[in-house]
Image 1 (cartoon, rainbow, N blue to C red):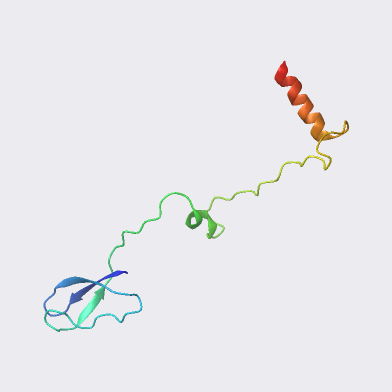
Image 2 (image 1 turned 180 degrees about the horizontal axis):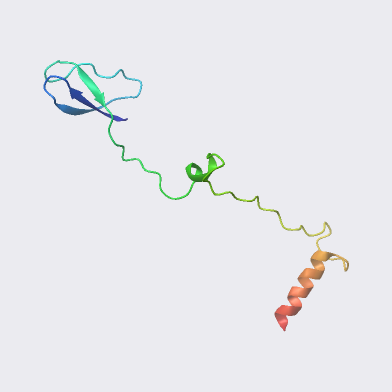
Length: 100
């Protein structure tokens, strides 16, 4: 539940109240029954590091643009066992260079 801060107009008392967001704001000081006003205070919530708020929903300026990743060429449907297959040729070349 959020914590809201109020200030009394008469006694200048500043106090905090834990309320649901759906609850109506306080209108009177619990100490002297005078009208109160809701204060805007700093939050302890901070966004640090990278993430959706840094580059996911930003406009075109100031955001890091990334290119979509292109998938690597897929091996042939036969599993790479045919002699003319580019996937078989690549794996044979890498196996030969690994043994030298």
